[in-house]
Length: 355
Image (cartoon, rainbow, N blue to C red; front, side, top):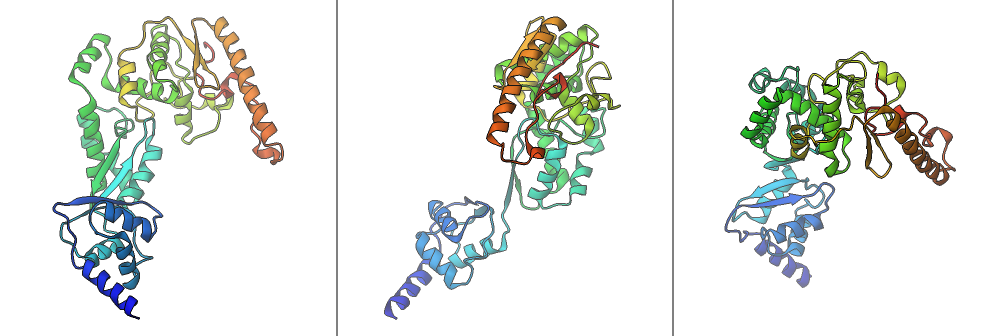
């Protein structure tokens, strides 16, 4: 009994106030229990003793009601105030990371989740006509211009404000000197972003980005179709495991197997390295490339050499598929990976044939 009373007194005494001198940011991870939260609070010097705070929260009945989030806590908060904030879930910041190569199809639902906003409101924000006008974008959405980065939004940030911040980040990254490059190459910024997005989706190795950009520029100069699989994926409207021959017949301006030149706009948000590669393609004669299982591409200058390269790549993909089938031979046939049997089925391939 005495121990319980003494412990209660200790907890109540410690709960009176914190010892912070300035605001601190505390992140409570999704799925974290009270123990993890208490440790985070102690590391941030919000509470002096994690164990005591945990007992205090249990005593107050709040040990199972804390919510994940990023919180900025003011100095001098009592433990009761801290617990109320964590239980209320009113985190003052909402964080989202947009990976390079994400499209609006991926960004919109995640942004809606982070902002706790309806998907419709996010979709309306990415169609902001004012921003489209400022950026001189000929497409109906801001596809490609929500720059991939980590964003921390204050509580209450609206979808339009969040989208403006993400577009603003793109404008910060875009360097004035690049406009000179555009003039020299007689290309618009939207053209470069369209090319950069394709490079972003195709490249697996950083050093290959300028070479991949060169392949597509060489094809444009030669009057050839780009035949870029990622644009077909975009034209389909949803992700498919493999681009098949039937997909190449989709009637869409984004289907570069049917329409010459670059697509109307970006198919995803490219990162800075891909933008730079699009602005500065390598000085190489290649017009074809094909992907290998290890992520590298084999580049060739003519269709005959490309056909040989495709056969070699197909054998490697077949070997990978065979290993997977052997590993998963007890699984139902419907989920076994199929052997790669056509150029259009090879994942992440570049132009396959010259039409």
